[in-house]
Image 1 (cartoon, rainbow, N blue to C red):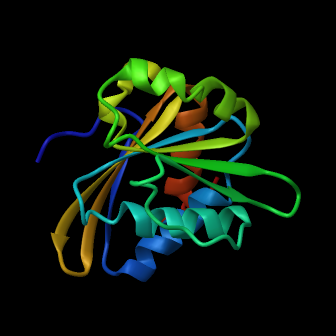
Image 2: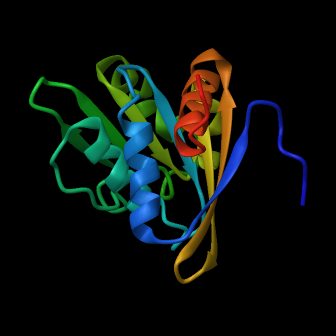
Length: 166
């Protein structure tokens, strides 16, 4: 097993419900301008995680994979927005730039599935979550923060998950 980079951590989810709860805990911390990148093959649990994240953030909007529309939006009653981008069908960073990622980040929170396809178009400040299928009910999640805000999000989430004192 490789050694994790500084400020990162991993968690093994034992059920879809637990994956949603971890997402909800992260969602409750998110603010306008945050960027969350979700890396993982089909079936890794990305959409399940996002369902919890959106609920924890305070939206009751239905979450589905945005594969065929590229970007789904979720809203809260206070006007907050989450932009859920699926970059799978994008060829490169140039195609992503047409979507005005900076404008989406200025308007709210940006969640990106398949971030490796548009990596150069994404801000350096983000929280990358790698998700891996282990078994039918188990997923491995590796939280890799980039930049000060990414580190802050990962640290708070780690403390909540493992019930560590602040």
